[in-house]
Image (tube, rainbow, N blue to C red; front, top):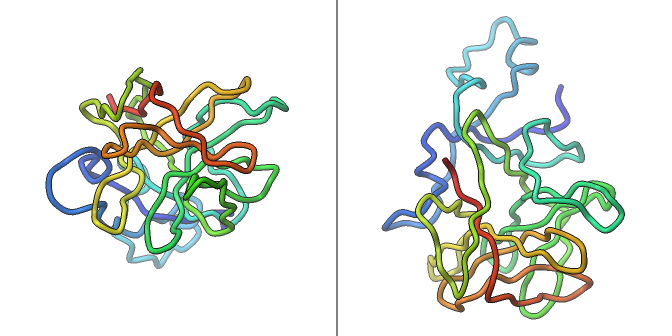
Length: 193
């Protein structure tokens, strides 16, 4: 059994900017290892489908996890999301901490239950933005209680590419860093190509 499981997104439109509802629930995802280990499996999920998916963390980082950059100690930082106060927030994952962090209400909040963004064969790029701008094909990583989408962004701060949430109505990107929620008007948005 793999150290992670999650959902497979076969339509990247489920993760990118669109009108209407917030992020919909994805379909169940079964890793190739799990699928091949059960010869009697009736699973209709094809784990090799191109696209993006979220894996629920159980401690391991999947090989397809999307990296944001490097931490000050040289370790990788990954993109995640977690539920907090009834909202879904983009998160930073630092594997040697064993948790994710979100930016919320002026604080860096630790989350032990989180999901990791993984990619199929699509390309990801980081596009420079400012003042709440959301580029075409920006990756949505969460939403507020009033259904405003929150997008995955990152900033270069204190020697790290720290991921966080672009909150369009606030015209900013918030990142969790050093125990605080920091706000930046210049940032990069994660975009699918």
